[in-house]
Structures are given as structure tokens and as C-alpha cells.
Length: 168
Image (cartoon, rainbow, N blue to C red; front, top):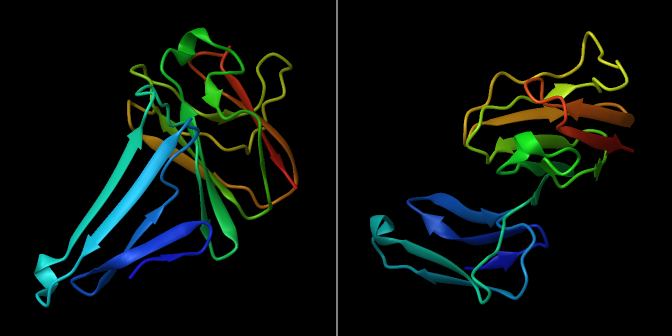
């Protein structure tokens, strides 16, 4: 069974659980995605293979979206080498989302970072804004935006790293 709804692919069942492939990739050039599902009568023998090939061999995952019942999760990467960057340290940047959507930042750098609401250059740092803990490589932080507006954010360890979420 393979069902595609524009955001998510239902590719089978494994031991009674549904198997989904969702929000798989970010920005690539010439990507081929193939999914193979083979099923036997034994629920424990279900096998799912997802293969992604890029003919340029230098693709970079930067973001993807996953829709969950009308709400979305937007993925933002803290890119490698970001402590030396400014408005390209968080990618994509800026991002546009809707009220109720969630942003998930992932530290893809080999340096510890944070995500803090505000802008140190302007001194606009709200007392009640969102703030992550220290994020080591591979760790994530997420925040759901429940009101409209433009939300600046930065890394508290590297004030040059800035980003923006625009909520409509």
C-alpha cells in the first residue's frame, strides 16, 4: 500500500503500525526518490526500503515541512560553521508560517548553540520569549507560535547568528 497526500507518504504497515515517510528532504537538485515495500504474511517480516539518490552527490538537507492535521512543523538547520555566519547561520531564514505551526531547530554544527527570541543588536529581548537549552550536535529545540507577528531570534553564545520567523 502506498498513499501520497502531498505532505506525507503512507508506505505500509509493520507489525500493525503504520509506516510513514514524511518531510524527508530539503533542497536538492535532481533528486530521485524510490520506495519499495514488500510484505509477507508474517507481520514481523515486513520490509521497507527507502532509497534516495542525488546525481550530484553534494546535496544538503536544509529544511522540510510536515503537516499534522492542519498544523505544520517547519525544520530549521543550525548549519555547519554557523558561529562565523550572520543571517545565514539558520537555514532557511526567514521563514513564514501560520498561527499554530511549530518550528523545530536542529543543531547540525559541531559547536554548541542556542535559540533565543530577540535581537541583541537592537536590544529587543523579551522577558517571556522562547529560549532553548544548550544544543549539542544533533539536538533539537521546538516552539509553537500561537500569535501573529515577526519574531527575531539569535544564538545566545554567538550573537552574530540571527534569524526570523514571520507568523501570519
